[in-house]
Image 1 (cartoon, rainbow, N blue to C red):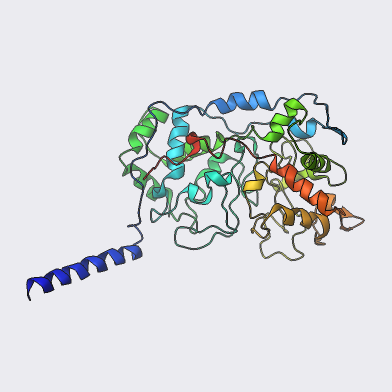
Image 2: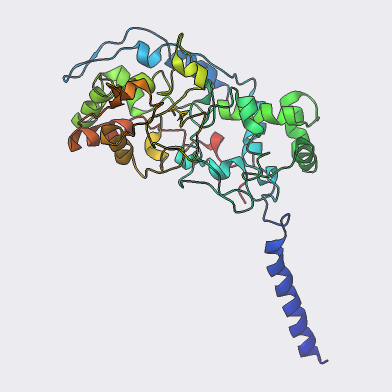
Length: 389
């Protein structure tokens, strides 16, 4: 065999080896060392922000269309569920949240399905897991979780600590078989011992510490600087007439939107006393179907999600069936299905309610929901991917 033939054969072998790497589950492209600032970002400020922003009190706002607001429906019953104990802890959590090594084949991180520019949601109906399989439900937005009392579409988790590792150990989402496998993978990385020591005081790595760090990073994600929040201070002077009309409809008895999407998080009011949602993990049946392939909590009951940043988190509902907010509003307007367990607020004499909203009303409600978008959460570096390459 001459030299040219040898070189050609070697070239073919190299090409074949590179091509075969795509079929090897543990040879996916993985990030390198995280790039972190010399001084930690300030994550603990979230505790002060909650105290300063959501203080119950009387708010009396007149924007012309009608007197607005029942303040207790907005700022009442604030109950902080998780604290952020240190900036070092949240920094470790940030690295873990974005690290592909938390998946079976080093290809998926928490952030793969919870994208910062989408208010930590996904922009597809169902997300792709580590093996190319699709998740069973739409990836919910992570927004003000420090105020949430339940998590997941079926409300099955009642703490961020419990929430943190469930996707990691899910056979579709990230595919780690057990906590021992997870801990061994983390121990093998050179950057984790120092990060764990900084957060906990020593280098010990275990799954409970891992869950705590992720939960505290997630807890620090706090949206409180939307145009709506600013409007509380300036009588909504910067809102358009369309947005103000939508706001009036949202808090009206006509739509009762705020009876389900209440409190500072515009979510299920599970923290209030004698609330029917307490027993169902913040879930309810909103008449999406008469027969459900996915029963949710039970009988078609799914979590009432936060509406903060809702304009960025489509497609909507547990299965991502609605592409935009207009379609969501039209569901409540004319398309509620007569399920036997339909939420009582959505019935009238035993039949589903119809709101008889005009096209202008629908546009106005969608416009108002757009004012709930945070101005900083989707761009702040402290919530961004520390793996730059």
